[in-house]
Length: 112
Image 1 (cartoon, rainbow, N blue to C red):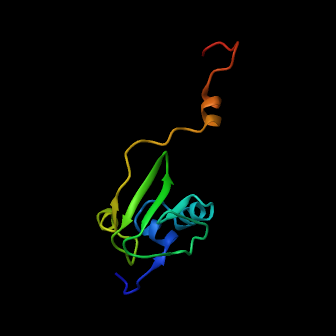
Image 2: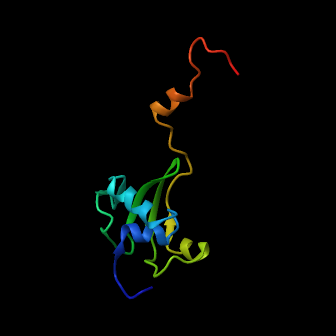
Image 3: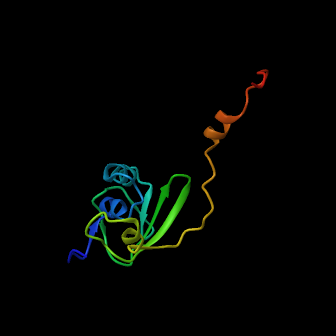
């Protein structure tokens, strides 16, 4: 740990290896799809403290994690997994209706 008592949300999501780049983590935060202790986060620089609960989308899942460590760097996966406790179900997020409609075959078209 770095001796600080808080860290930026986007930085922590990157440290914990939920997102491949910090920029991607910042974009998800700025989009308003991250919740910190039930409150919507709209700024990537929101402060994150030990014991906080984060809810955010990752791929086709909604992740819910409790912060156990703040981290000081983006280390190996084993070190990253020690930063959080996973509270989420393993159920995938259903696809949006727009995606489902795009996957349906059109009427009158022959299968290939």
